[in-house]
Every structure is written in structure tokens, then in C-alpha cells.
Amino acid sequence: MAASDVFVIVGASLAGGRAAETLRQEGFDGRVILVGAEPERPYERPPLSKDVLRGEAPDDKVYLRPPDFYEEQDIELRLGVRAQRLVPAEHSIILGDAEHLRYDRLLITTGAKVRQLNVPGCNLPGVYYLRTVADAKAIRAAARAATRAVVIGAGFIGAEVAASCRVMGLDVTVLEVLPVPLQRVLGEDVGNLYAQIHRENGVDLRLGEGIAEFRGAGRVEEVVTSSGTRITCDLAVVGVGVQPEVDWLEGSGIELQNGVVVDEFCATSLPDVYAAGDVANWWHSGLGERLRVEHWENAQNQGIAAARSMLGKGEPYAPVPYFWSDQYDLTLQYVGHASGQDEVIIRGPRDPRSLLAFYMRDGRLRAAFGVNRPRDITAARRLIRNGGEVRREQLADEQVDLRRLAKGG
Image 1: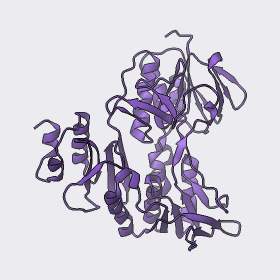
Image 2: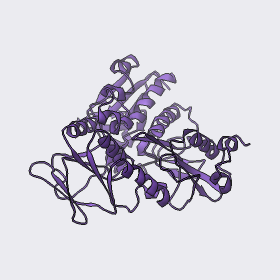
Image 3: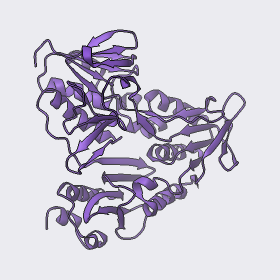
Image 4: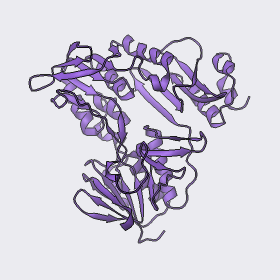
């Protein structure tokens, strides 16, 4: 790489921030330009639904680096401006302020955007989505002045918001359109145990129930469910999933399919263009399938991997996916990648506060989910990394030491 080269990163996210740092750490001395739609420098999102929302940590704790870091590292920040179009024939992107920004290498780390509801009253004040620091602060302020909250969606974000609101002393109702929360991820049996966690903590969890309307005089005052039930509330938080932020890439010729399609080196279908993080749909050579993962660890590590690939130092990116969620006094962890068709094996008692479940396919361990079982999840991750060859009887038997199995013992 020459000192005159320009590397542009679109998306001042966790993935984008780590990629920019890595370029400098690896000795790149050309220009590094980090473009972000938000006015914020790169930060981590997991604390938003927990510590930040509850006000238990300083707001600046979420940022990857202090403000002067980027100047010291000669990383140019272009914040509060969106990329509008990619013009690969010109090796440039067009920004929202009409600037044409030329690149020698481009990394796309635009992440995902929230799915929004389109029902009557959806634009009333007091109806919130959680994706940004500003969103978390707004929900926190509303929750401090509230007594009743409704959360739409019992996925991980919705569940974390519900748990935080309960910790803050609010009455919380959660509406989930599926018959079992997280059924596609955890399966029916484990999903039911997951539901039990929230009910035992005082959440009014209503399954198979969607939303028909938000109502209120100038501000949301009640939610009308799909069955016609009316639920009084002071605020409502919508958490019905996200979708890749790729609108600005339409018409560029880049391959899009559930995000930006990349290979195991984070390279897209266009020359000199890479993608990483929530927006990237990448080929996992170890699992033999494509994945798009919306979790902290993947965003960080894939951003680092993409930066090295941009410098010609890349290696196949094939980690065992990992995700965690803190809810109430519990730590939930998930490793691997399972599907709704995988066999589910629950080890030991069906205790939602100390749960361990495995997901098998074709005689191989594909994933594991644990509640307050960190050592077992670490062992399961090693088993998956080693190929996942294990008998279901060994997984089901509490007397079998998973750590010895992971070491080949």
C-alpha cells in the first residue's frame, strides 16, 4: 500500500471503528476516512438496552475510544453525514452533502436499521425504537417518569428492554406475535423456558399477540392488540428486529442478498470493496453456509478481519459465532449457529435459571445455549470449533465432563 492510498470506511460503527484502528495498527500510512450517519464517534450497542437505559453507567462508557484518539491516529471522521450512492466505476461514494469521496479501498460497515411498524398511531410521541445512543437516552428519560411500559417483540432487544424497565420498577407488558419467544433461534422447549424467566420476574408476557394500534391524545396512552385488548401505558418500545442498511447500495452492481454478500475474506462482488459486521452476509467455510450475524463479537472481529484483508494480509474468517445477553441477574450465552430443524438436547433439570441446551444436526454439535453456565458454554464452543463430533448421550448426561470432551478426553 502507498502513502497516497485512500481507504474509506462507511459506517462509524463498532465494526468500522475497529477496522480503522486495525489499519493503523497494521502499519497503513495512507488516508483513513471514517464516515458515519450518526453524529457520534464509534460506540458499542450492547450497553444501550441495559446500563445506559437504566442509567447505571456513564454515557461515555459506550465509546470505543476518547475523542482525541482519532486525531492522534490521523483517522478522519466524517460524522452526521450519510453515504447516498456507491459509484464503483469511479471508485467513489457520494455523500449526503453531495461530496464525491474517492477511495482506493472501501469497507462497508453500515450495520442494520430497525424494522418499523406501520400501524395507526405509530408516530405518536412516546413510541420508541432502540438502536442508537440517542434512542437509549430518550427511553431512559421516559421510563424514569413512567409507571407502565409496553414492549412489542420478545426477541433479545425487546427482552433486554423489558428486563431493564422491570429493574427500574415499571409494570411491563410484552407482546410477541409468535407462540413461543425466540422460537426460530432457541426452539420451542427452550423458548418456553426463556418465557418463564420473564414471567417469574413480573413481566406480563402475551404470546401469539400482535399490535393493531397505538392510541393517545398527543402522546401514546394505550396499545390495542391484534385481539382487540387495550393496554394502558406511559411509553411503548418496539423491538421487532432489524434489516441490513443497504439502500444506498441499490443500483451499484454490488451483490445484495440479506445484506452485502462477501466471501470468507470479507470481499464483495466489486473490486476493492469489502463489508463487515451486521451488514455482511459472509461465507463461513467451517460451517459450509452463509451467515449474517447481528452480534457484538462478530462486528468487532469481522471489522478487524476485513481491515487486514484490505491490506492483503487477510485470512479466512470462520469463527464460532458467540452472543450473550444480560437480563435481570442472569447471563444468557449462545454459541454456534443452529436452525429450527436441529435436534434440541437439554442437559439436566429444566431450570430456566441454570439452563444448558445443545443443538445437533447430522451427528454434530451445531450450537449451545446456556443460562448462567459460562464454563459449559466455553467447552461447547471448543467442541464446535473442533468439528462438533459428539454423541447425543454424552451431551445429555450431566456426569460427562464437557471440558474433557472438548479437549478430546
